[in-house]
Image 1: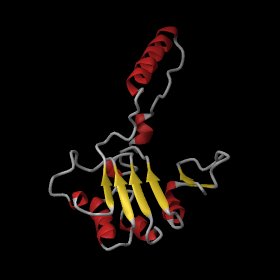
Image 2: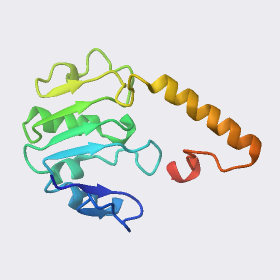
Image 3: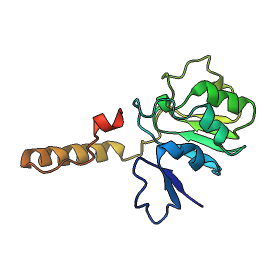
Image 4: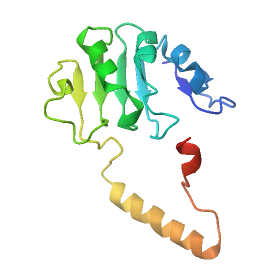
Length: 157
């Protein structure tokens, strides 16, 4: 498998990543992919990032997966490509509007798998979350840096 990534900083890819592109080169990054997996956060910088231009840049028959945020996808454009066969299929865990409305075509398309916004859940999720909270509380009280800090200003720009 060849793995291509997209992120703000394209330096120092991991050993298993063939190439890293910056977001302004997203169309180029998805062009040869058989499968495109989206894990993006929401925010103004990522709003409708996957639009007609990006879907049209994807390889015909490619599969699309979104486990990030629904706001990063123009669902109308995605549905068009799924209905006309441009995309082979999609697995979607998140949507612009949740719960996904009953009248959404995504429910009835044969080439779409809809999941209930649970992609990140595992059997031990609860205990891992409690462990992380406890560790961050300990770090907070001792003045150590917290784990898994998100820069909200950066995410929403």
